[in-house]
Length: 510
Image (tube, rainbow, N blue to C red):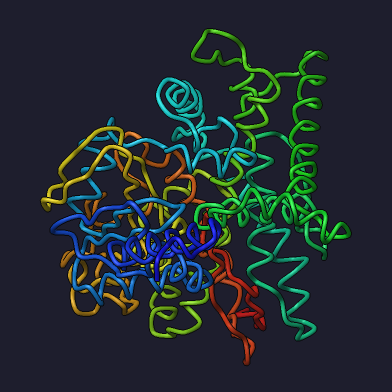
């Protein structure tokens, strides 16, 4: 048929169809205009859109999907091409991870997509900052995380909160044979503890049966920010959403809730300081800090500080404790062995003496081994991503181009037989003990549970102490049992919370 017989619109349609067909043939398994990366095993996607539909379809079990992807492609480094997300190279190779986070740290930053997705939550706080802005925040916070604080004040607060929890929640549940959402209790415990330690505010979340409104909105924003990382049309959906369902709370509503909380904390502290009161906590430290330009921090920056450190201080420890007790309930051998170590070392008198409790817990190798094994299999931050500023070559020979997003998955790494041996998927705390019974150390690249390199977690000792104090005090007093017919799984967000909580029955040991 001659094109002379076609109308202009038909001709345009024909040309468009031919062009689309040609592009689909060329980019038949990847995003349009994205070229193959030679030498990197890759997950084939769909014409023009690449792997985006696959990623969205596996959103609810994304960590297991990426674990399967590494296994299916039989490689520790893989790649995907997705329209709207860009080229992403993923690795669980310990040498690569150590290179990205430590050895060539300067080349890998928080990229524009990450910063935009998390801007409303993190702002320019430590988790979302690069360069000098990140440096001054890390320096200011590091002063708070010292041994004396851990040994005395921090342990005092943890024990105080745990005593309230045992008396008013678990004792009552045991006496009445009532189930308890252990996951919810842990989140309230870590929120109460950290907000009191860091900002001098008593939230008293453990005293409330309902969820804390701030915490609910905080969780909703985290989930939404994570969703933005894989859904290119998030700006459109967040514009339309409030118009279609105005009766629901949306992102801006949740932002108002967390902002109100943060600014009230700041205003309260400023009023107390004006009245001559003195504080030595995280908030007071930052109120006296100067930014990269030499200026004192304004309220917006202090708000960012508060929200960033709540993620670090509440979420990571709460999920670690929840998964710890889940695994202990599933593995009675490990529970019995841990209980034996606790009974050998901890007495009521030691619990009453914070410095003594700190020192005794430091010397309990099996408790540490259990906790480290949990973080291997259920890492509090199960996945992360950086942005390459310049071309690079990873230790395994993978070529990275400037602008690539490079992801690593502690969750998938912990399940990899190539990294952890044939029993990688098994819960075996003994792998963390030397033949002499001491705690074994692994490289940051093999076990990046607390990140690695210059950005290694400042609060790793705090998180470990808080978790072990809770494990010791709770396991001494109670035997927990899972309620039947529950689905215990995770939510895909910044950390690794349980999707449906975890209902348990409580039985007193004495």
